[in-house]
Image (cartoon, rainbow, N blue to C red; front, side, top):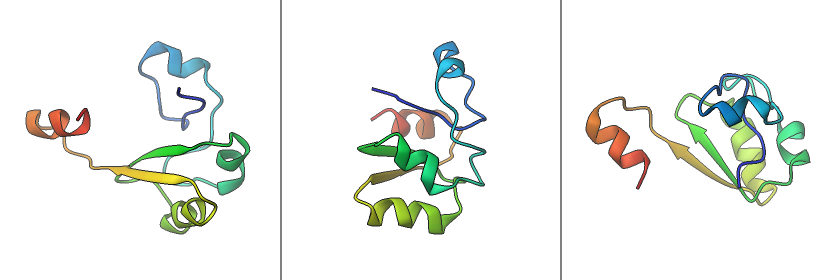
Length: 79
């Protein structure tokens, strides 16, 4: 279940109705932790890295998804 998104998430259309957590490269831990996530999917450019580490220290699983727009890269993202 997706409970929130960063400000740049526009697809699918349902993402526009989710609570926004800030800009993908300038995230803060507080709004993310307020959603009580069990998992955060973070693009390779998400950050700052210190915030992602803080989420992990708080017990949140953070999965970094590589940025690769090739056909093989897209296939790897959905595995």
